[in-house]
Length: 255
Image (cartoon, rainbow, N blue to C red; front, side, top):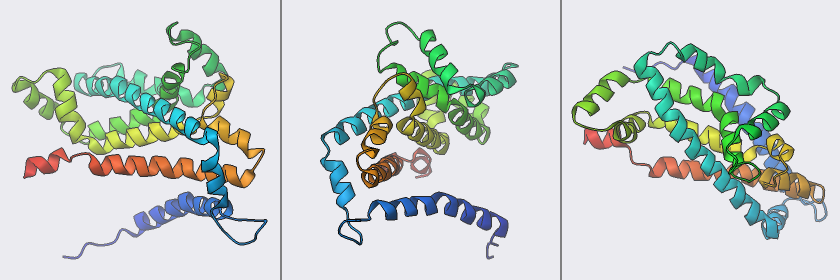
């Protein structure tokens, strides 16, 4: 029996693909222009990579974003799991609180949240991952929430606990592999948002990859666009590689 094509879904996905990829393709085309020589080339990309600050700032933003992902998973996965298992009356309240970063002005958030952090974190670059986590909270929380809603969480948890698994082992070895797609979505959203965050970083007077891009844009706008394209391509390749290399526990169990 042939599977029918869902035309509305196909149209929606096509529109979304055009919305995402047409600007990226246009930016890439613009970044490979060579106005002096005429035509196209990789001159702007070579200029960007040759800059001595390029590697420093991409690595700095990279490890800050990776640390943000770690903070997000360590805090949110147990929290959202507990909310689902306990059927807590606090769940609607927490759902609402998780949306606050979308409505609180970044200026007010930057100052208030910074003061609330522990003193050993304040006034160090390590404050950024915790602040990035708060900015990514609305998206990361819902990605995990949807993933946990799609599985029989209580049955899986009770089965793992009945075999003597601790709560930490249950979450790491059972729940996370089952909601692998939601976890990867959380990682991708958090990493991308952290890598490209500019406003918060500027307000707190830190230098990261996005702030460096705005600085070099004053010297070479096409080079800055080339750098921006690389900042999109590099995380995409990295996250795709992680997804492909991560073992599929469900497939292993079926074998």
